[in-house]
Length: 162
Ligand code: PNS
Image (cartoon, rainbow, N blue to C red; front, side, top):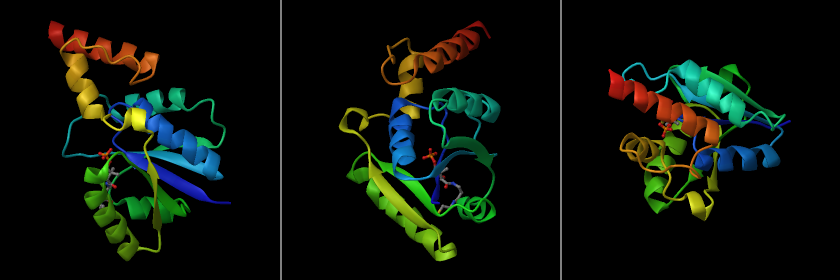
Protein backbone atom coordinates (compact mmCIF):
# COMPACT_ATOMS: atom_id res chain seq x y z
CA UNK A 1 0.00 0.00 0.00
CA UNK A 2 1.52 3.32 -1.01
CA UNK A 3 0.13 6.37 0.72
CA UNK A 4 0.98 9.82 -0.61
CA UNK A 5 0.19 13.39 0.35
CA UNK A 6 -0.68 16.27 -1.99
CA UNK A 7 0.08 19.30 0.19
CA UNK A 8 -0.80 22.92 -0.46
CA UNK A 9 -2.69 26.03 0.54
CA UNK A 10 -5.69 25.28 -1.74
CA UNK A 11 -7.08 28.79 -1.32
CA UNK A 12 -9.13 27.73 -3.25
CA UNK A 13 -8.70 24.41 -5.05
CA UNK A 14 -8.27 24.80 -8.82
CA UNK A 15 -8.64 22.42 -11.75
CA UNK A 16 -4.82 22.34 -11.84
CA UNK A 17 -4.74 20.92 -8.31
CA UNK A 18 -7.46 18.43 -9.20
CA UNK A 19 -5.50 17.28 -12.25
CA UNK A 20 -2.61 16.33 -9.94
CA UNK A 21 -4.87 14.76 -7.28
CA UNK A 22 -6.77 12.67 -9.85
CA UNK A 23 -3.58 11.41 -11.47
CA UNK A 24 -2.09 10.65 -8.04
CA UNK A 25 -5.22 8.66 -7.20
CA UNK A 26 -4.60 6.52 -10.29
CA UNK A 27 -0.93 5.99 -9.46
CA UNK A 28 -1.06 5.39 -5.70
CA UNK A 29 -3.25 3.38 -3.32
CA UNK A 30 -4.15 6.22 -0.99
CA UNK A 31 -3.95 9.99 -1.42
CA UNK A 32 -4.32 12.57 1.35
CA UNK A 33 -4.88 16.14 0.21
CA UNK A 34 -3.45 18.18 3.08
CA UNK A 35 -4.13 21.87 3.63
CA UNK A 36 -1.43 23.87 5.37
CA UNK A 37 -2.67 25.91 8.34
CA UNK A 38 -0.46 28.97 7.95
CA UNK A 39 -0.97 31.16 10.99
CA UNK A 40 1.10 34.01 9.56
CA UNK A 41 -0.99 34.32 6.37
CA UNK A 42 -4.71 34.96 6.28
CA UNK A 43 -6.31 33.37 3.27
CA UNK A 44 -9.51 34.24 1.47
CA UNK A 45 -11.18 30.96 2.47
CA UNK A 46 -10.96 29.57 6.00
CA UNK A 47 -9.27 26.19 6.46
CA UNK A 48 -12.71 24.60 7.05
CA UNK A 49 -14.05 26.12 3.82
CA UNK A 50 -11.02 24.93 1.84
CA UNK A 51 -11.46 21.41 3.24
CA UNK A 52 -15.17 21.42 2.35
CA UNK A 53 -14.44 22.52 -1.21
CA UNK A 54 -11.71 19.88 -1.52
CA UNK A 55 -14.00 17.15 -0.17
CA UNK A 56 -16.69 18.08 -2.66
CA UNK A 57 -14.19 18.24 -5.54
CA UNK A 58 -12.70 14.81 -4.75
CA UNK A 59 -15.84 12.96 -3.68
CA UNK A 60 -15.75 10.83 -6.87
CA UNK A 61 -12.31 9.49 -5.87
CA UNK A 62 -12.71 6.74 -3.24
CA UNK A 63 -8.99 6.57 -2.33
CA UNK A 64 -8.67 10.32 -1.68
CA UNK A 65 -9.18 11.95 1.72
CA UNK A 66 -8.57 15.45 3.07
CA UNK A 67 -6.74 16.74 6.14
CA UNK A 68 -5.12 19.88 7.48
CA UNK A 69 -1.75 20.25 9.13
CA UNK A 70 0.32 22.78 11.08
CA UNK A 71 4.09 22.90 11.16
CA UNK A 72 6.36 20.72 9.07
CA UNK A 73 5.04 18.60 6.25
CA UNK A 74 7.53 15.85 7.10
CA UNK A 75 6.03 15.61 10.61
CA UNK A 76 2.57 15.20 9.07
CA UNK A 77 4.02 12.44 6.85
CA UNK A 78 5.60 10.60 9.79
CA UNK A 79 2.47 10.91 11.96
CA UNK A 80 0.21 9.66 9.16
CA UNK A 81 2.33 6.90 7.61
CA UNK A 82 2.77 8.81 4.36
CA UNK A 83 5.35 7.25 2.00
CA UNK A 84 5.82 10.13 -0.42
CA UNK A 85 4.95 13.75 -1.13
CA UNK A 86 3.42 14.50 -4.54
CA UNK A 87 3.96 17.89 -6.15
CA UNK A 88 2.76 19.19 -9.49
CA UNK A 89 5.30 21.04 -11.63
CA UNK A 90 3.78 23.71 -13.86
CA UNK A 91 6.96 25.01 -15.45
CA UNK A 92 10.71 25.06 -14.96
CA UNK A 93 10.26 28.11 -12.75
CA UNK A 94 8.58 25.83 -10.17
CA UNK A 95 11.46 23.40 -10.31
CA UNK A 96 14.19 25.31 -8.42
CA UNK A 97 12.11 25.87 -5.31
CA UNK A 98 10.37 22.49 -5.44
CA UNK A 99 13.71 20.69 -5.76
CA UNK A 100 15.07 22.64 -2.79
CA UNK A 101 12.01 21.74 -0.67
CA UNK A 102 12.16 18.10 -1.77
CA UNK A 103 15.81 17.88 -0.80
CA UNK A 104 15.20 19.63 2.53
CA UNK A 105 12.28 17.32 3.30
CA UNK A 106 14.41 14.33 2.27
CA UNK A 107 17.18 15.44 4.60
CA UNK A 108 14.77 15.77 7.54
CA UNK A 109 13.22 12.32 7.12
CA UNK A 110 13.27 9.44 4.68
CA UNK A 111 10.20 10.78 2.87
CA UNK A 112 10.62 11.10 -0.88
CA UNK A 113 9.00 13.59 -3.25
CA UNK A 114 7.44 12.63 -6.57
CA UNK A 115 6.94 15.32 -9.21
CA UNK A 116 4.07 15.10 -11.68
CA UNK A 117 4.06 17.46 -14.65
CA UNK A 118 0.92 19.58 -14.70
CA UNK A 119 -1.20 19.07 -17.80
CA UNK A 120 -0.33 21.86 -20.27
CA UNK A 121 -3.81 23.40 -20.17
CA UNK A 122 -3.23 24.24 -16.49
CA UNK A 123 0.42 25.30 -16.66
CA UNK A 124 -0.42 28.99 -16.00
CA UNK A 125 -2.93 28.27 -13.26
CA UNK A 126 -2.47 29.40 -9.65
CA UNK A 127 -5.02 30.07 -6.89
CA UNK A 128 -3.56 33.57 -6.45
CA UNK A 129 -4.20 34.46 -10.12
CA UNK A 130 -7.70 32.96 -10.04
CA UNK A 131 -8.51 35.19 -7.03
CA UNK A 132 -7.03 38.26 -8.70
CA UNK A 133 -9.06 37.73 -11.88
CA UNK A 134 -12.29 36.86 -10.02
CA UNK A 135 -11.93 39.86 -7.71
CA UNK A 136 -12.05 42.16 -10.70
CA UNK A 137 -15.00 40.38 -12.28
CA UNK A 138 -13.03 38.27 -14.79
CA UNK A 139 -14.28 34.89 -15.95
CA UNK A 140 -12.54 32.00 -14.17
CA UNK A 141 -15.04 29.31 -15.13
CA UNK A 142 -13.09 26.42 -16.64
CA UNK A 143 -10.22 27.04 -14.24
CA UNK A 144 -12.01 25.99 -11.06
CA UNK A 145 -15.01 23.71 -10.42
CA UNK A 146 -18.40 25.46 -10.78
CA UNK A 147 -19.24 25.19 -7.07
CA UNK A 148 -15.88 26.78 -6.17
CA UNK A 149 -16.65 29.60 -8.61
CA UNK A 150 -19.99 30.15 -6.85
CA UNK A 151 -18.27 30.39 -3.45
CA UNK A 152 -15.55 32.66 -4.84
CA UNK A 153 -18.15 35.03 -6.31
CA UNK A 154 -19.94 35.10 -2.93
CA UNK A 155 -16.68 36.00 -1.15
CA UNK A 156 -16.09 38.97 -3.41
CA UNK A 157 -19.74 40.06 -3.24
CA UNK A 158 -19.42 40.10 0.57
CA UNK A 159 -16.16 42.05 0.36
CA UNK A 160 -17.86 44.63 -1.88
CA UNK A 161 -20.70 45.10 0.64
CA UNK A 162 -18.33 45.49 3.60
O1 PNS B 1 0.08 25.70 -2.23
P1 PNS B 1 1.41 26.17 -1.70
O2 PNS B 1 1.20 27.39 -0.81
O3 PNS B 1 2.41 26.40 -2.78
O4 PNS B 1 1.95 24.98 -0.76
C1 PNS B 1 3.20 25.07 -0.10
C2 PNS B 1 3.37 23.95 0.93
C3 PNS B 1 2.20 23.91 1.89
C4 PNS B 1 3.45 22.62 0.20
C5 PNS B 1 4.71 24.21 1.67
O5 PNS B 1 4.75 25.54 2.08
C6 PNS B 1 4.91 23.32 2.89
O6 PNS B 1 5.18 22.15 2.75
N1 PNS B 1 4.73 23.91 4.08
C7 PNS B 1 4.81 23.22 5.33
C8 PNS B 1 5.97 23.72 6.20
C9 PNS B 1 7.23 22.95 5.87
O7 PNS B 1 7.30 21.74 5.97
N2 PNS B 1 8.26 23.70 5.46
C10 PNS B 1 9.54 23.17 5.07
C11 PNS B 1 9.56 22.89 3.59
S1 PNS B 1 11.17 22.40 3.09
